[in-house]
Amino acid sequence: MKKILVVLLSLTLIFTFTGCTSSNNEAAEDIEIKTQEVVTSNTDDNDDNISNTENAVENANEKDYDFSSYENDIRNITKNVNNAKTSTNASENHEQFYALKKQVDAVDDELDKLDDEFEYAYQMKEISFEIYKARERAIEQLEDELELAEEALENKYGIDD
Image 1 (cartoon, rainbow, N blue to C red):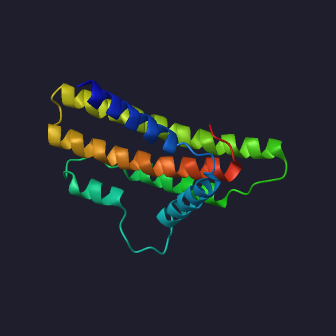
Image 2: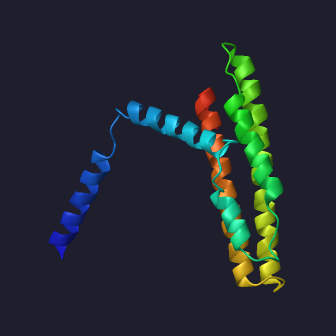
Image 3: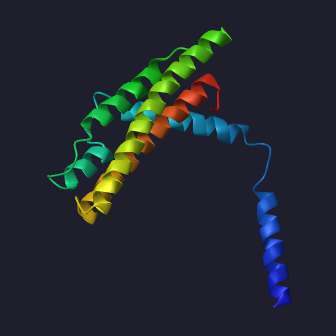
């Protein structure tokens, strides 16, 4: 039994130190580029594909909640992030960053409140479990899209908030 514990501990330490390298600059740049590309591809006006969020909302229940205003808000925030121009003036960059970050946080707060309302409605037996889960999945997808916009914003301005 002691041998197994020693082997497991040794493997854990090996994997811990193997994964921690300091030469992740290229990986970080790749992630930044991919994040920006994903956010840009989600806002392409000429794209004929229906987003996953819209599919989830349509497939939920006809009595389900309309998330289109949140989808529009996130789409507008994403466009604003993609169109934002960085400046050589650090003060201007901070102002632009926090103005856009404020928009992201506002929508995120609204989605959190909405999720709480749906959970309460389910607990009060006002909606079924299926409707609650469908709405929760739709909110999670919206939050994922919002997170992509926030990551692109942080990468663009080099600020990790």
